[in-house]
Length: 177
Image (cartoon, rainbow, N blue to C red; front, top):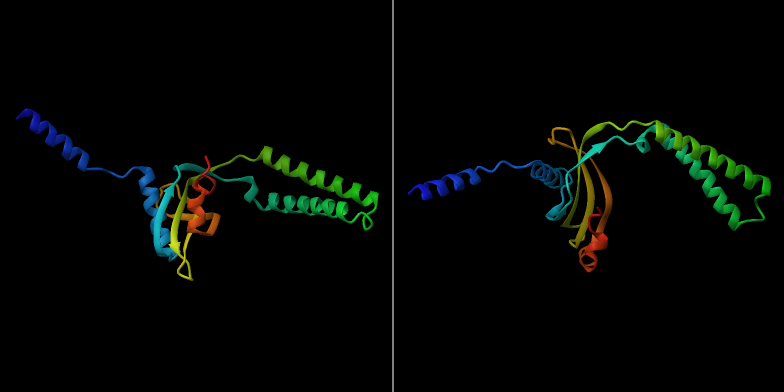
């Protein structure tokens, strides 16, 4: 009789399952996809691990500005190699120096930046029907607030990948660790 009572108590305890943090995040992401993004026939495929999310220097206005300038000089360097008759040696040298200058500023901003905890992130791959009623796969990283109550933003990894293409190479299109 004691054994039955013990087993019954264990079963009752296990049935009072409280969702863990990952399950809470998954539910919020699913609600976001269904209610906000209005994806028809949403079907989850895979969730990544729940991880801490921090601010990034690469999202600051100053870093973006200097990195864009660096990229412009990098592009001019590539063009100068393709069109050698248009650019003089001095212009090529000056462009390279400018690129290195802006890269040094970006490096300095990165080293001085202190990331701050902003909440949580979880990667999710899911299937749905697009506007042509084709099965497609999306892969996004969803960011949740500190309390895991709201999705505050999402970053697209890829979108509208044909469902059959995804399943031909799930390792390549899957979640990278």
